[in-house]
Image (cartoon, rainbow, N blue to C red; front, side, top):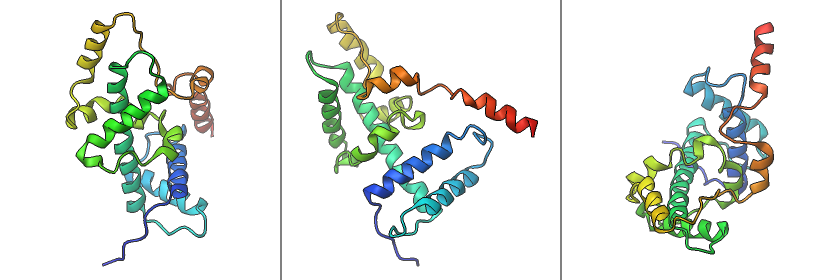
Length: 195
């Protein structure tokens, strides 16, 4: 039975999330690969670029770590969505984020709290980690239907408008929507076809 390796450090998590995002958003390969090929590419890129002092990680270890971060991030997005729907007047985006982290701790599966602040700015806008999946997570964790909470908040305070939870507002205004495909996707596919 193999020995269990040491836990991931914050620097390892940051690098792993960066590698994962680069490979998952590759416009040329895209969805034309198997799951095994995808995770092999992530593991290879991680091992090739990692610091020499870090532990070696297997493909399975890397896959499990990303799943752990992804699951916690989706849960936090669900909490953010719910806190947004009952936003008290005068609360800033930072206040909402702190309330969401407190709500996150209430779930028995996450009694250690939100542990991934150091990768939040990198992964919060990645579609797979975003709140498009949050409804499923929030319903399964007992936080109720986010839509009904949103409707009731709007009925109670019709003058309140919805706001973006993005703490880095300038990035989205300049960069556009994160859910759209990058412009260079078509160009890269055309280049590949011409070869």
